[in-house]
Length: 75
Image 1 (cartoon, rainbow, N blue to C red):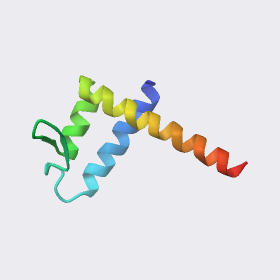
Image 2 (tube, rainbow, N blue to C red):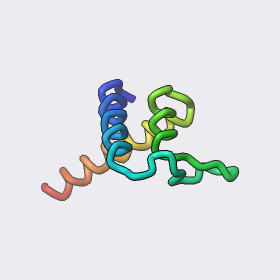
Image 3 (cartoon, rainbow, N blue to C red):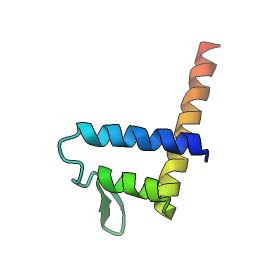
């Protein structure tokens, strides 16, 4: 994972949190009955916890996949 991508992701997560009415309300389940709010997601990414690293890697993979799919469709 690149620092540039991680920094861009943190910026976008901060922007997202500023626009939603309840950034502390859980929005996803992560197994075992645990949930995460947008603010908790940001904290995990920021702190580079194992969960934050997985989330960042997944978003990075999705971004790359999206870019590749767009380029293939344009060809």
